[in-house]
Amino acid sequence: MIVELLDRRVLGAIAFVDGVTRQRVSTGLRVESDALTLRPQASGLYVIHGADGFEKTIESFDEPAAPPPGAPIHFAARVFDPERRYLARAFDVTLPRPSTPVTDPTSVLVPLEVDLLPASAMPVPARWATWRVRVQIAGSVLKTGLANVLVRVTPQLAGFTTQLALTDAHGEALVVIPNAPSVMPSAGNGGGGGGTPVLVKQFEATVSLIVDASVARAEGASVPPLADPQRIVARSAPPQAGVRVLTKPNVTLAAGRSVRSVIEVSFP
Image (cartoon, rainbow, N blue to C red; front, side, top):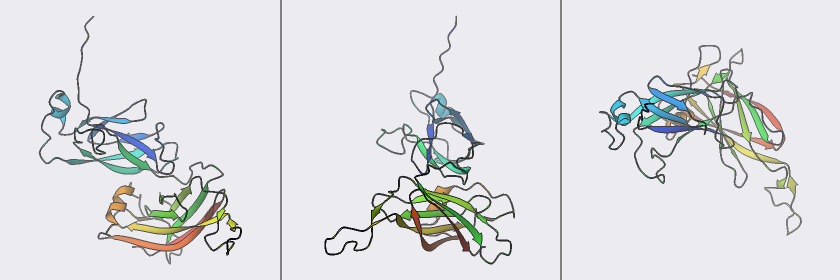
C-alpha cells in the first residue's frame, strides 16, 4: 500500500461566537466566501485552507513563502444560520495572520472570533430580560421598518456589559440581557439613614442606535445587504460620512419579562 503524506500550511481559523452568551456556536451554520476555502472541524472551528493569491504560502510548510504583493488582504465572507437563531451577517478576514505566539490575539494560532447577533425568532430562557424593538422610519404612513440598524443597550447594573442587536429586514431587533438579577437594591437612597435598602425588580438600560446609510434599507424597498456589525461600530467612532449615532431614552427592563417598543428615526 502506498501512503502519500501531504503537508499544507493553514492560514488561520474562524470561531463563531454567540453575541449574547459569548459561547462558541459549533453547529448549524453555513459559511461562504468567493475567495477563501473554509472547512468546518468537529471542534466548531472553520479552518482557512486556502485563499486567492496565497497558493505558495500554503504549499510552503517549513519556511512560509513571502505574502502576496499588497498584503495584508481583506477577504469578504458571509455566515448564515438555517435554524434562524442568528441573523446572517457579513465579515472580513484579513490575511496573512502573523506566525506569533498565542499571546498575540492576531496570531495565526488564535481563531478569529466573529460575533453572531440574535434573530427575532431566537429561543430565549424565560428568566432572561428581553427587549423587542422595532425601528421604523418617522412619518411613514405604512410604518415602514428600517433594516440593518445597530442597537446598543447598556444595562445600568454592575458587571453587565453592552449588548448589541441588529434590525432584520422588517426593522425588528431582539435585545437580550442574560442572567439579570430578579431583585436588586434601588438605585436611590433606599432605606436612608442606614435603614433596610429598598429592593426593586426593574433596572434601567441606556439605548443608542447606529444608522449607517451604506447598509440601512427601508423595509420592502429592496433586499437589504448583509451587514457587518463590527464594521458599523468601527464607522461610528468617530462617525464617518453617512453614519449617525442616535441617543434614545432609557428602556426599563426586568428579569423574566419581555418588553416591546417602537423607535422612529428619520431616513434617509
